[in-house]
Image (tube, rainbow, N blue to C red; front, top):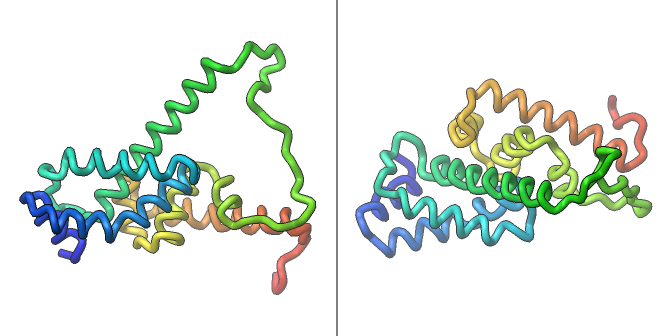
Length: 183
């Protein structure tokens, strides 16, 4: 059992000092995960929502998975709920559009050529982005990421590989590169 899991087990037994230590050690990863899955503006609220959900169910934590994996799977669900809320709100607020393109702003080219990697990662398809952020940004193993997302490890490997391919294409397009060095 890893240190974070031990902290969560102790916190589940009512140790508030241990609970504080657990939150302090995991908060940055939860925030970054939420920022990547939804957006930076919502990350604070989603992080808080994640911990509220986690503390509401901590007594059911059985330590079958690591505490970090358990917590990030809760964060993923909080983010998914927020995305669904936004989609419902957008559908209610969009005026009828006979062309069927409401809500789609025209793509804006960045003439400076300065592209933030965070913004590029945010353009990835949701499942690929989640797998990429867990493994490449937060440093979870493929097995931990698979558990957090509730998919087989091979699916994580595939999503990360495809996310990398997508990012290479995005970087090439953003920089106006037609061929990567050494390719």
